[in-house]
Length: 163
Image 1 (cartoon, helix red, strand yellow):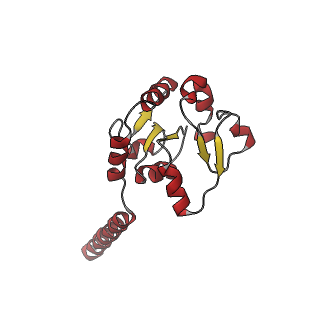
Image 2 (cartoon, rainbow, N blue to C red):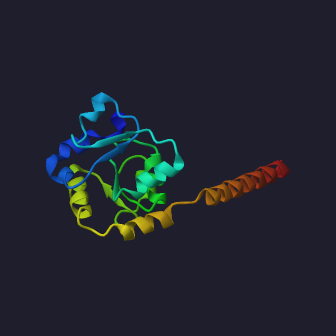
Image 3 (cartoon, rainbow, N blue to C red):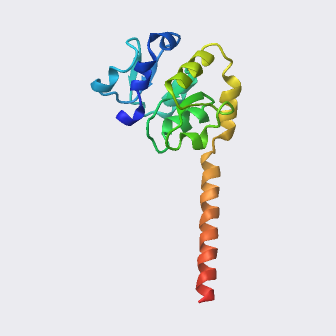
């Protein structure tokens, strides 16, 4: 989709892109595929959880150049798999990535170019581990949801009693 920001990859030029083997998972429409490096491997949609985990494990870096996105699953999935994410300061991405602590955030093509140049030679494992630690586990989210429901119920009961 246009909001995914793939044109930003094309705008980088060959320099930063040539340092990486580009792998793209998901459905890529032909009008968008032109923005990817010609040697990019298109994997298609991955429905199997084990295969998805293995795909993330094979990546050193995950790029999410979204122009506008609520909270892309790929960011949370990659972080949960201890991958370093380079994301754009758009939508909910800055809510989960703390710049230079749990991933990298970009606001311009220059930021993206610097992030990729740095990542090409950096030890990404510490950022990946920090990303994993910062990503909530499903049971943690379930506990938070239950607590919110309890609080809401208690507030509702208090309001009802006060009438």
